[in-house]
Length: 154
Image (cartoon, rainbow, N blue to C red):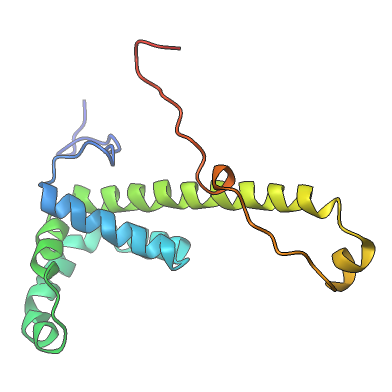
């Protein structure tokens, strides 16, 4: 039995209680953070300000007239309403971690492929970088086929 309001369980980033538009905004925000290589700083920042998410949403209300005159953000109000909910920051963190794991696995596959390719290079290609061949990374390395994990099959 918990004395605290709510549950201590970690929410599932794929099945949340958020509306679809808020879910979409958080998803795009997580993808942008990972695309720009800012996953770790974003996680550290969000973990440090997690208790202040409602205050941050109210600060967004205060600065909305200024921000909307300078920039034209269509999803500003949606992000603000998502930040009002306590679980939204944890969902955003889980999405960032999920997308960062996908990018990290892809980088590992590319590195392993490059290591195999470089075994056939001559010494001046490996160490001096002279006359390196053009490399086309196969699509199987970049985006491997997804495994079918349906519950009825093994």
